[in-house]
Image (cartoon, rainbow, N blue to C red; front, side, top):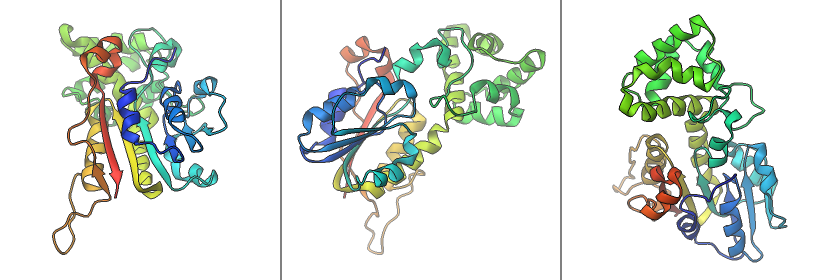
Length: 297
């Protein structure tokens, strides 16, 4: 089941939709955002992206919509293919969909005992089990620290390497059993989620893909076009925030000869928009969501 998208109406408002405009939903999923965009269009058009084949079952019958079954890192190529450059707005709802978390065999959740898969694109080769069973101690340490933001990243990585020498780590239950003792009982679920996050980011190259997307957005957005991004953890949000503010991912502001900032985007939201208590109560996934909106100058 695909749940209601997080910050649905706020994100669509952020696009500032023109009835005859061209828009892109790079994370189609259940189609919730796309349907609302289509409701605001008359003779405009919408290009949507989703690399997950499950999304194909959610396509509404609408001639104004084209769904590209590809990773959004190929944004510019496919917009060029469909003669859709420039565009008036781009929406990205990052992270894993509720549907992906809720399908046990996808291996995204600690709630089910399932194969360690975690691929958003099920046709790619690398799975989470490959990362756990073939990566070096050094690589696993780096992944757990950088992507999981774990302070005891070396201990977790060493525990995984020791565990796989006894038997390959092939299931979510085996992973949980291997590393649970690394964390205090009261915060175990939180830290296990961070381990799963680290693996998922590595398997899907999520941060590199996000950087590629943001860079291409500048190339395809029309002046006055909007960029709307919903992120779910600090690694994503930091990249989005820095890119909007400075045009790069390090957050280093460049200035011209006269001291004026050299930036291509104008932040529409100073602080990120976050869900209210009512939305969080209805959808637990919303609790960590941050929405940022920018406009191309």
